[in-house]
Length: 202
Image (cartoon, rainbow, N blue to C red; front, top):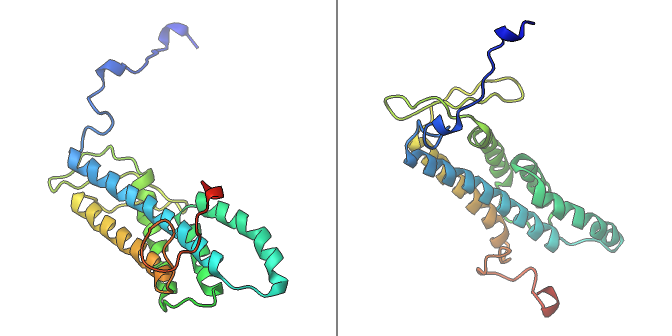
């Protein structure tokens, strides 16, 4: 190749628009997007704590105790690192395995959480370079593992609605623990504490 014909270039960082690549959307959009994504993080934390609550209060036969103790720490570690879909599946299992689950519609709750992962993945991983339309909505670039292209326009109202739904899901997860009479871990709320901190825990 003739070296003289190669047109080399680098990005002029100083020439980029302020707040690039987010300059096309108003601050209200980014604030609501951030709050919605953060709410998904709260839902994941809530599921992890619920998994702890159900596994810590489950009754075992004498011949099951040693095996359960060996499996418990890895299970709790996964609850800290797993993402939403896997957390929902683990939550579903531990509620089924528990001897005193009192909420009847856990399966429906789990399906709602799994459905929410579709939007979560778009909001967390989509690229928002398209300018909003006249209604303030834009379609992020997002393609899932099945090569399906996300095509729903998203605006501030859409994000706020998603956030409210995610908060409702988190509250329903908390209910599954507190409805049994247990205090939700880390909440200081009503119910019997699952784990009493001692001086050695500090």
